[in-house]
Length: 325
Ligand code: XMP
Image (cartoon, rainbow, N blue to C red):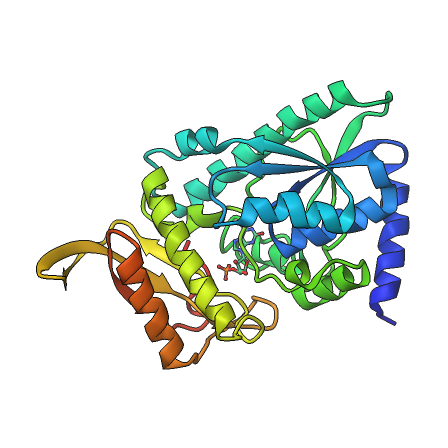
């Protein structure tokens, strides 16, 4: 008999059993999954857990501040912040292929964690080794990465398929039997605030897989602005709970002709991908109000340099995936 309370109690016992006296680290991505996983493990083993927030420069606007302030305030976890922006940009330079990007981002993530681990060990107040890595892997992540019921590998999920072979940690994955809505219930049960629990899903590889083409600093800045505008307008329109998530995608390798003021423009399109879903395994494109779409479109083309067109993705999943890469 499944209740959120039972799941929390069972997981806390299982985590204590698995980790023992050793230490664990957990990467916070800014998303619901890693936040709930971290809160659960924090509840189980307290200060034996240190959270690591890797600022890979692929985050959305305001997201780093949200992790560094709101999450810490809600849970009291020990947090170590690593600024790895240059490192990720360098590793991604010249790469356009989606799977290669995912693998690079997953690999760099682990490398940065290993470095953080060494630092945490060096600073540890006792002799217990840092032997565990906490991940917010969900059931659908496992199925879609080919680890579940024998489905084909669709995408290398950053927290499953993208791990290098020489990983040094044992994994703690307390959410691996849960779907997203269950994870949210667990988060609420743990006392996390609504802004964290009801945050829309955001992929581990971040904006890196929402730029179709090479990832560069300028393109990230541009996409971050467009994404912030879309999120602001969706929130203002009260659509946050109705829409499962709305990826905002920059088609960096595409240009189209436009006219603005009295001049010709030759800029990039931004794609809006609002979807409705229960668990991200399947999704439908959200029939959202035209006025909201119009406001987002007007603001993005006016406020974001080099973007002269906004298009709407009206594909369900399948055949389209939610993310474009
Ligand atoms: P797709 O694009 O496969 O996405 O339909 C399904 C859901 O998973 C999210 N997503 C990810 N989440 N690491 C994650 O933690 C990843 O590498 C990743 N890729 C996609 C996506 O945003 C959607 O909610």
